[in-house]
Image (cartoon, rainbow, N blue to C red; front, side):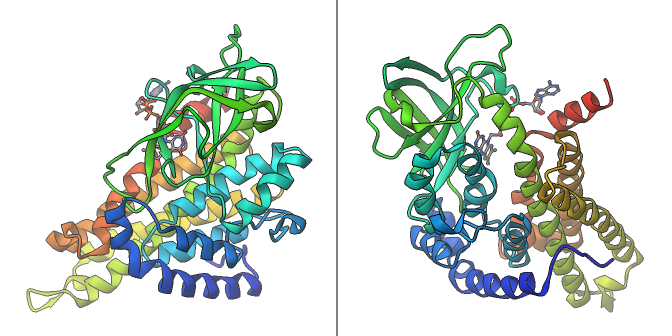
Length: 381
Ligand SMILES: Cc1cc2nc3c(=O)[nH]c(=O)nc-3n(C[C@H](O)[C@H](O)[C@H](O)COP(=O)(O)OP(=O)(O)OC[C@H]3O[C@@H](n4cnc5c(N)ncnc54)[C@H](O)[C@@H]3O)c2cc1C
């Protein structure tokens, strides 16, 4: 069914991004996997091409757009080439919105131009070893001391934890009866005394992106590095999570689509029993089911993007979209891998990487179970 999200300008932009990824990402993916992170030069080029600051105001070096649809095109263009632009996506879709919404004028001047150009890459550190789903259980502490906060604690599973120059750290600044109160956003910068990075964690998939532990030992963070008001971070996180969940859903549906397209082509080529794999009724039925689920997910998702742009996407609706789209992706890549037989398990075939990469989308950005809790709450349960 026809999608209505994009104009001719989006399609021209898609061609440009596809050419950029084909020339400057795809040939290096194995190299980046071995290094456990993408090349810094690639990120700078992405900045030069304007891929890092769609919503950053023009005066700070961005495009000043008021729509998420160009972010969607970037993820879709990468998925069509069988990779997930994790580092870019976390920077643009997940972390930048906090700077755009909560930075004051001085902070905007200081950070936005560097974030739009790729001179600075951003990450967000919420999760800790003892608390992932239960965000209100954050133990990293920041104690105000004059014009500084003294930050102590540790974070884990932080995307771009090795690469990032600026990291928004969610820290507890007060013990309140309601655990959701008393959390604050502090921007930790590369080189601050007492800030160190741990291991680049070994992952099942997305091996070309870095995911790290971070440690804070008496890090003196200037009050000038606080984003927004003290104690208000839980509310800020809740209002930005619908965009994060939409972004993950875009990656999920576009990767499921790429898996389907690749599997249809494979099934037509693979010969056996004097015929092709595509000729079996099972192949047709399985891929018909995959196509139908993707179609449903795509239209639900496109509607969510429209609502995100209109600022009407509710947390419960974003949770429904993430739950559905990521579960569709998981079923799709599993079925597509099965159609490939043993070849699907080999790294020479991209479907094996898609399978490994897909597994995390039901976990990060809030697990499927947490999505169900949010949805159930909206039902009054
Ligand atoms: C590759 C990767 C990248 C990540 N990037 C980042 C990042 O950049 N920044 C960041 O802050 N975090 C990041 N994370 C962390 C991610 O958001 C968490 O892993 C996720 O929220 C789940 O938390 P957890 O791992 O602690 O699991 P847990 O919270 O320990 O969950 C374990 C299980 O318990 C279930 N569960 C939890 N609570 C309930 C409940 N109330 N009812 C029923 N079941 C429940 C969960 O659904 C899950 O199945 C990343 C994680 C991964 C794997």
